[in-house]
Length: 230
Image 1 (tube, one colour):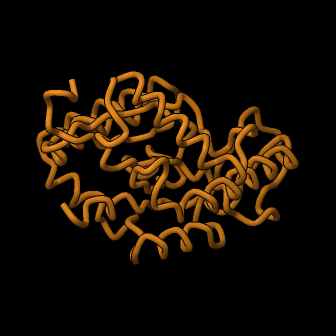
Image 2: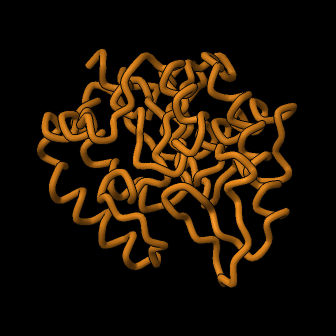
């Protein structure tokens, strides 16, 4: 493909298939002069206990290499790598992780309720270490890199729904979002720039904001910054 195609590649790394379903159609419109490709991790590599601050960059690079092999393009064909993550409330103080008789972790406005406080704190600290390492990175494997967040997750930001959703509910939301914005890129960018959840400031400032207090449980995103030069 790439031997005869002069378009360059923008690679999005996402946690789940609904991220691709919701965002890919409109992103292909916005970046129509490039090939938009999604690499779906089918999980959260930032909370994977095999990943830490010492191998986080190497792990992301291994996922980039998977797409090089999958599509048969060269490293030089990639002009940007955009890593999309959910915060999952992971940056809150440990004191705001409390025990409760719950089957699954419950995310509330200013606390996480869990049946295992030590396990949830360990997950949070794991995610913190990885993202403290990744967010300042500007290049990974010679490809320009940036990581953007949805807080506490994509459905919370895009649909203002903070519930623990089923896979079917997430899929329905993704289809609805794609139907709304796939042919309306200007509306999509305007929506992401909504002052209700778009964190003000530059890239570094938006990350310092989400690291503070209980902000990573609230409805916030910095993805609008991706389009500041579009």
